Structures are given as C-alpha cells and as structure tokens.
Image 1 (cartoon, rainbow, N blue to C red):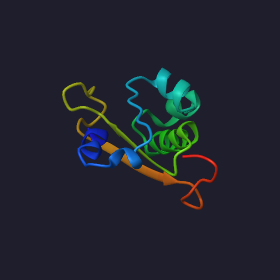
Image 2 (image 1 turned 60 degrees about the horizontal axis):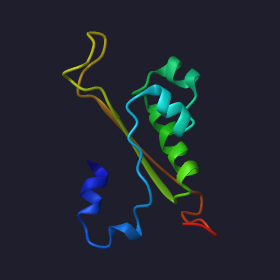
Image 3 (image 1 turned 90 degrees about the vertical axis):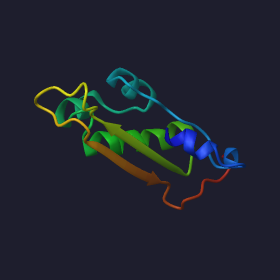
Image 4 (image 1 turned 30 degrees about the horizontal axis):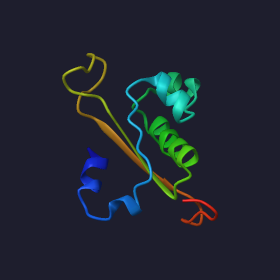
Length: 102
C-alpha cells in the first residue's frame, strides 16, 4: 500500500527503486537476511525484526533509504497477541547517499 501511494505521484520512479512484500519468516530470512534467531527471540512483528528488515532492504536494494512495516492483523491475531499493532522503522545510509549506484 505504501508503494502504491508513492507511485501515484508522477515521477516517483526516480526515487522508488524496489519494494519487498514478505508474508513469511522464511522469505524475510532469505530476501532481507533477517536472522532466524532474531525472529525466534523477539517475534516477527518486533521492533528488532522490523529494524533488521529495513537494514536488509537497504543492503539488498543498494538504496539510500528503506522503510519496513510489520503488523499483526486483528482478524488473524492469536489470543496472545494484540491485533492491529504495527511497527514502522526507517533507516538510511550514513551519508544518505550512495556513490556508484542507484
């Protein structure tokens, strides 16, 4: 939904390089290099895992800025979790700009 909102703006392809939709822990570990240990220790919707997702997206896409969002859906939340809770994290390269790449 975030990528859809961004791409409604003319010229947005100049700033949006990639997007990842990962609904499984397996894909988060394979695509975004989030460790299984981190997911097992803190949970898939934890601040730590969402931060790792954003860092992984930065590395995999060679972008300057990455945003990661994770949510427990209210309709599918087990009794031990509060549905509707979400986490958002942003990270960027130190300089905010990469050289030699996009």
